[in-house]
Image 1 (cartoon, rainbow, N blue to C red):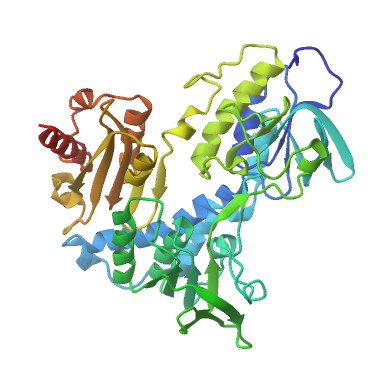
Image 2: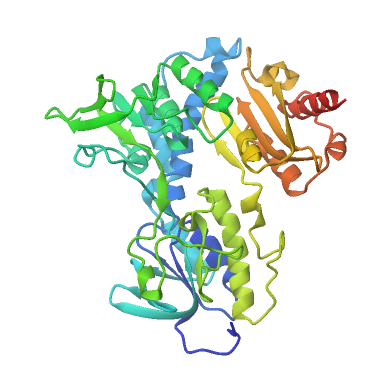
Amino acid sequence: MDTAAPTSTDYDLIVIGAGPVGENVADYAVGPNLRVAIIEAELVGGECSYWACMPSKALLRSGHAIRAAGRLPGAREAVTGDLDAAAVLARRDAFTSNWDDSGQVEWVAADGIDLIRGFGEIVGDGRVRVGERTLSARAVALATGSVPTLPDIPGLAEARAWGTREATSTEEVPQSLIILGGGVAGTEMAFAFAALGTSVTLLSRGALLGREEPFVGAMLASALAAEGVDVRIGDDPVRVDRGADGNVSVELAGGATVRAAELLVSTGRRPATSGLGLETVGLDDTLTVDDTMLVAGTDWLYAVGDVNGRALLTHQGKYQARAAGQAIAARLAGGQVHDGAWEAHAASADHVAVPRVVFSDPEVAAVGLTEAQAREADLEFRTVEYDMGQVAGAKLHADGYVGRAKLVIDHARGVIVGATFVGQDVADLVHAATIAIVGEVPMDRLWHAVPAYPTISEVWLRLLETYRSEAA
């Protein structure tokens, strides 16, 4: 692809989608010699800023703080009464800037990026239509994210169920709520609304967070039950109805019926490729990309973040965006592209070290492979586990601390390939594990990474001691 020669295109790069992923692609590509535009049909800042990551965590945090205080003598006596739901919602609104994107718009302009409002649709190689305008570019990056999937349940489409957007932006706390789906969003929202005083029923086809280690789902189900959530595993809905009184009823396969004021459907997401005009350039809705996010079969189209289906997580999408933006800039300038494994223009971590945190209570923090995935990969591996309640630093955080840690170790190479932590305040433990995996730090060298005492990180020492003793 010889893109160094001058062209008569409107832009060097057009990014479709101004969420955190699209913003990062544009930011890492823009420069004094590159003209970049970003197209957005909704709010600049995208799903994460206004309907997902930020508002959901704002809804969760106050409940976590109350529960954490309740686990400490002295603090528990000082905390009385229920959460102030109105105050929690107001704090949520502050994190979304009241769904006003003017601050993000100012950032785009200050970075020298043109913002074009509207829905972007590809109409040919390097050509994008927005309303009545058709723009041309030397490169186009899709950063349109993902959209919820709706299961095929009779009556569900007509029942006006909430999606995650409605749940995180609600102006009122419902008296009762049925949540369909035991994944990340469903589990987090069960904790959030239970703390706000809602009577919650959680319906999950399989174990909660079924892709994680088996003990994760069991611990979360127990914690939710302790908060008064009715957790039903394996109760499949067969029909949904919204009654004349506004309430929702869900009929289950076993014959039982559950009723609530609202129903939240959180059963997964898919790449947002519909209506993008991919068929005009010979592509379908499944986009395959290389590690620079270049779409297979093209030399001008990139797909970054959720839209490529590699890792549907905001931080991973932003990581891909940094690689893609720099790769695009290099190609457009006729420079060298460093796309080998772990080089600057390659999103290599997608394959081995994707960190993920569920802001439940207890929190779940994991990275890399689970034991089941290591087995599927036919690795020669070993696992070690430790009860985090036995760690001195954890005991300081809560009386009766409940948690568990597990490492999956490639025994042939002597390096960690997966880690899972469950417990109060464990989210930040995952970055140390991510560094160990990305750096392929040998277990013998990790022995010399001394955790400060008394912190929760001391669990690393206990895991390494367990590994050494079992290997002896």
